[in-house]
Image 1 (spheres, rainbow, N blue to C red):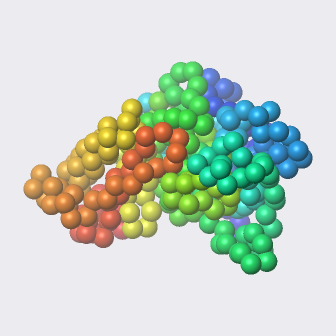
Image 2 (cartoon, rainbow, N blue to C red):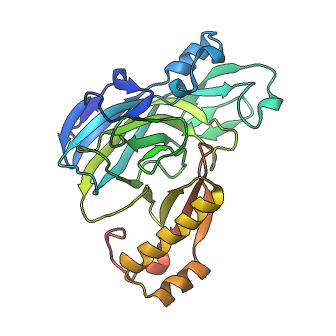
Length: 302
């Protein structure tokens, strides 16, 4: 079955989440949109361009902005990730970048063959394609926000494996019409992006963007099949951890209607912390939904 969708070409790529850029497209809430994402810097590296000749922000280019009619500050933009089609994949080695740079004698960028859903790294190593969005965010109220670092309350360089097909992310709207940007797609990435680089890719990302007036969030939140993730950013890991915990308790109390005693018990028994990507102090509070199946709120649709 073919689903009608609007396509935003990768020619609308930018190196920041910009509040005052011309909209690449303007759509009603609930529209299905396909974002073409760029792998331009990896093409350049493969052609022999030196890494230092390419700015870091250029590595995290995003496509957009998509203006969603009716989105207003104070509301949330719900983005359902329907599909991610990887068009090309790259194994990138930057000998001056990342915690594993001491293992690299030189910078290299090699296109990786994709065959039957597998990344053909070598004749001995084949890895599954597990696509995810590295950078997704809304424009700030004014000016621009880096797509490299830090992560912002309205999104940015999250680098989360959970941002794959079938998941949903809510982002707090900062300016009228939201202005959604998507880029930095990975064909595969480890949780926390331990090497500070994944298997990078050019892709086509299909999403449904909807205004959600029922959700009030101060930072991104992500829903997978079995888990709710609350993203917290802060000036330090400790501050982000405390904010993540407070967000979790607030959601349990207000959206799942738990008493203070019940929310405390859930936190003791079920709540988990984990770090986000390397773009700054990012902590995720991970709430398994199975113990909450009896509560039907906006985040746990039947």
